[in-house]
Image 1 (cartoon, rainbow, N blue to C red):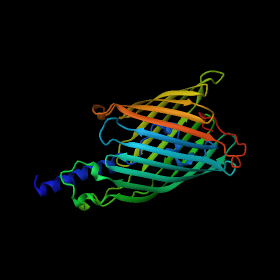
Image 2: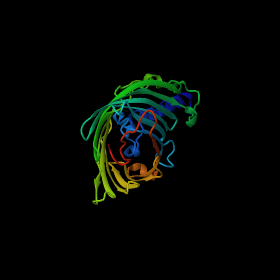
Image 3: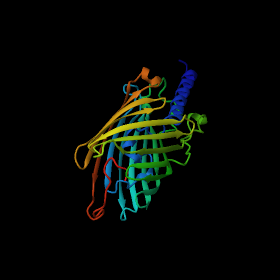
Image 4: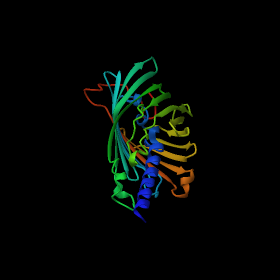
Length: 316
């Protein structure tokens, strides 16, 4: 291949990679927001009153080369006699040759009613975008077109509302408000690529199926929209047994059928697992997605005193 053709090929390859990244999945799509609402709404900070720490791992589109892998660590708690909530969330997302970190702190102010709470939340932090082009199979390895996006730091902030009762909640959030320009790349051809805003509307209810509250049903939904992308809706339903075990299914429009479980290991630990059965055209290359979650909750002596903490499967 001649040098001009090599350069055209390299430039075109970079355009495809960057366009896919910039206009596709910019922020990880989690399934187990179901058990950790903080990943989509900063107003959820402190909703469990006690300290709640969660680790999540998502292996998306199994066996598909360059498919996303996401690691998430988050923690949040209530302070000031449950008047405020604070939280911290760290995401590490890998997509092909790109690595993306989100580091965000969140703050929620709570207004308590007789049997309900309204929380107003803010989050602020940075997105760190990096690229390792050694993972690409390039025809020419010294093309300067690939030098421009290597490390990029972009600040951003978001906001949300979270209204909850013992058996019902509704939340609205915009986690990233600033449309940051990602970078100038490929000699200016893709200089207008920007981070997109996400909008989340989420609601759910827990209803007993017997008079002793041993078995409950937990229907919920999530409406997710990203600028420049089609609307996505998750329809979820789970059954909760003895406040110890939960199992359910979800349908994500145009994408996946999801099965998930959650198990109470002890008073402090919960374990969750979900599998997304791919229904889109990607099903020709990958059968689905694994996601794992472990949650730890505890009261901090001297901070929480003796607060009334909601049950794991309750919203308040």
